[in-house]
Image 1: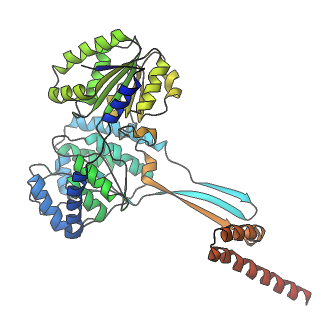
Image 2: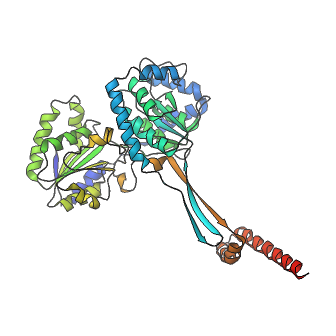
Image 3: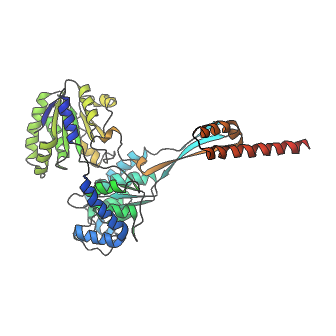
Amino acid sequence: MLKTIGKDDRAELKAYLQSRAYEISPDMLVKTSSIIEKVRSGKNQALHDLTLQFDRIDLDDPIVSNEELEEQAAKADPQFVAAMQEAAQNILAYHETQVQTPQSLEKEDGVYLGWRVLPLDAVGIYVPGGRAQYPSSVLMNAIPAKVAGVRRIVMTTPPGKDGKISPNLAAAAKIAGVTEIIKAGGAQAVAALAYGTETIAPVDKITGPGNMYVAAAKKLVFGKVDIDMIAGPSEILVVADENANPDHVASDLLSQAEHDPMASSILVTTSEPLIEAVNQALREQTDVLPKKEIIEQSLASFGTAILTDTMDEAIEISNEIAPEHLELQVENAIDYLPLVKNAGSVFLGYTTCESIGDYFGGTNHVLPTSGTARFSSALGVDAFTKKSSYMYYSDQALQKNGHKIIRMAQEEDLEAHANAVRIRLHDASENQDEIEREEGE
């Protein structure tokens, strides 16, 4: 089931890494751009027409009323709602630790520098609403925004066949503190969030997963608004030693393979017998899973085992791959954490499966994919804030340092910059002369 690659076969490993690259095709960008322009110019009418075209739903109003929200949320299973409420508390507690305190510095007499942490005013959260519905994504996107202090949190999701929001998403939105809900999906929903319509005010940032049209739309509106990331197919890398349970390893690899035929499931281990045992477990478990066809496609394309001599080598390879999810199913897993440089989220020990992080543990499940963990981070409170610097220079401080600033501006041939300082120094000098004359009299 898993294709085995030797640790020293760098050419094959490099080819594998390149095969995972996620790029949006030019043709997809052209199609998506056309949809965005329709919404940008046609606003509500275009959103209505595109929802009718793509979702086969004729909506008089895409805005979810309070009555509809309450009605739909009441239909959700109470046990599921209770589990979401507890998960939300875990997510809230974790993200509250990320809140940054503004800082100020008195550099010298009369010079003050500092920075402020300010919440974004409005954010949009895209939530899939077709065959794949993820209430957990509502929690993961909205709760950090709420902790950051965002005033307006707008969720957009495709309507169901009945023209209403799904009960589970309605319940999640209530728990997470979503302030507005729009029944629209695809690129047209992203365009409505970015540019606004007659009844939908634009937002400052758009987050959340979606299909290729959603990803392309987020890429195209970036600059008009901020976005979280262009998410590629899901991926997991399990570093395991000889004591890892092959059934557990297999189940975790399958937990990502069921997402998408393009999902990546990778095992890096020092034990060749473990690879054989995991392959057997994969066959047995796949046979009884409902998404067997998707899993088999995923494993055939991107299921990989890499055999190494040491755990240090295994983690070195993991750092090169920079996985979205990294599991360390090894003895004393916490001791290896300092070696991990590139990973979206790390799960330590034999019992900490990635599913805990997806739903309940508290860490965020919106993570960098396709190797972008080399330079980007999990979604968090910082994603919903902006930092603004400030400074104060007294007359005395400007007198002391003004000539240095003038010299630097002149070297860059920006005489107006230099003059903005020079004129203040001149005025200050004249004021001082006048004071001295008055004192002399």
